Image 1: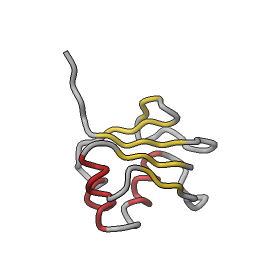
Image 2: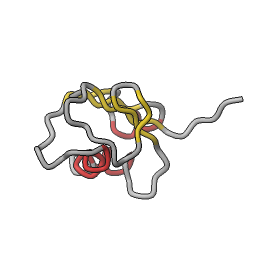
Image 3: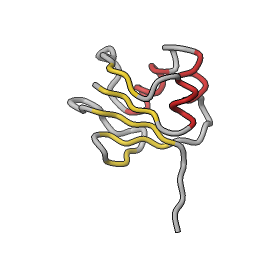
Length: 83
């Protein structure tokens, strides 16, 4: 699965995207966030508990309880506004 990071998250993690193979117990976006935090200090900082960021699974906005089985891409991005 591809994981993509946008804006300041990309700079903090140190890569714009990465291919990962999470363990079977990683079933939801929230599980993935918890697992990704263990990959590096940058991951831990960008995906810290209480940090404001959103997620998308296969280009659809997702909450942290959404399953990731069979997903091709999960993206993380900071909050945004529009007008």
